[in-house]
Amino acid sequence: MTQGVASQAAHENGIAANDTDKRHIHILIAGAGLTGLILAQGINKFNASPEAATYPVKLTYEIFEREPFIFYRGGGYSLTLHWGLQVLQNALPNEVLDGLDSCLCNPHFVETGQTTDFQYLNLRTKEVVVRAPMPKVPVARVARTRLIKLLMQGINVQFSKQLSDITWPADDRVTAHFADGTRAEGNLLIGADGSKSAVRRILCGPRAENQPVAVKAVGLRCHYPVEKCAKYQEIDPNIVHGGDPDTNTYFWFSLLDMPRPNSDRPLAECYITVNWPFEDEFLGKGKPTDVPTTRSERVGFLRELAEGWAEPMREMIFDLPSETDIREINLVEWTPEKGMWDNHNGTVTLIGDSAHAMTPFRGEAANHGILDAGNILNMLLGEKGSGSSDQDLQKMDLKSLITAYEDEMIERVGPAVKRSTQACLDATHFEKMRSGSFFVSNRFEKKVAEGS
Image (cartoon, rainbow, N blue to C red; front, side):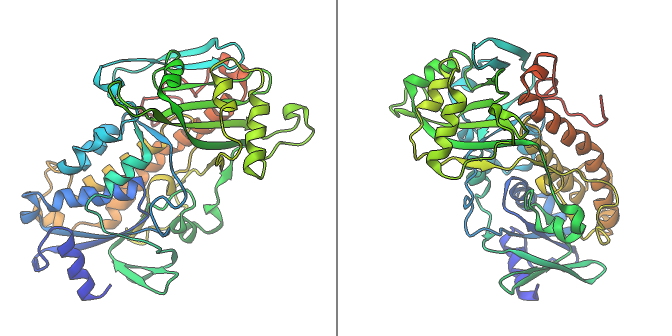
């Protein structure tokens, strides 16, 4: 990065460019998804605070996104924020935090203090097979698209920046090279570029490959009349889901944007996923059943699966227009291990799905990614109140900092990846749900050790 660009980046991130007595750490964030944007917001929040003026380290950043615009590949599903919620709130500037309620999928449910249990249904009888009480901790179901839009507030994302290589011009410098021929130089490159991470691929080589989970999945966004959603909400105010004991198909319906009762909006935005085991003899077929090719074929296949389901689940599928945009969801896992990559003296690391790809069946992935971002922010900011002296902070050893981050993250997420995969497999094997499963047990507890 040239001196001119460095000065511009410093100015844009809310601090003076002439802080020559401070140590300057310039961070390159690869990926403008959830975790990358949280990092950027956390730095913005600190740089706008009074503490930044006397902090011995000047933090600046640039953020790059490989796609031409933010929702190029869709992304219209919901996230359940539980033990990561407080970490997110702590990272955000007040002007961004104030907009968090606008991301809620069902604001009336939250505003009226309603509660519900986590229920898994028999899709053919509507019987509640498993019921798990929700924890007495803050939980927020938010629409991912609205959350990402909120997190982009005040962030200058550089789009169409596909990472092609990483080089190290010095022990404390890293250069990101992009396919368009440009490059950026900094002190720390953070790979927040998702489960198909280019940063991970460059660092880990063949070991970067995701491992497929033996379950097929499709997802779609749709709109239902508010009065029809009221029937679904008789089962649960937010989510209707369960399994088919005859085929082991799993179905999920959730609200993305439910109008308040006094709204004149006639439609609610919803999200549906359907999953089935990718194994022999599914639907009596000799070979595993793949996702059909065309839109009409996919709708027809879902209707075949839903035939015989109880209402309103059957109706949800049969109401879909024949040309509904149904997208395949690749369910994969990737578990980080110590020694898998070299962080090059603390100049490069991974967070979020780049560091630990997992299925969505326990609602943990986003929370772990948020915690990754929060932990790195705390380390870079001297964990406010940790007792570190200015001299210690000015000599901030990125190698020790990043290694400590990676050690904690790897220990924390390894069991989580395994739990999420097992939950996915259990959800698509009905009898496993009857006997208890990671899919419903202790969903909102932050765990570290296996079996804890």
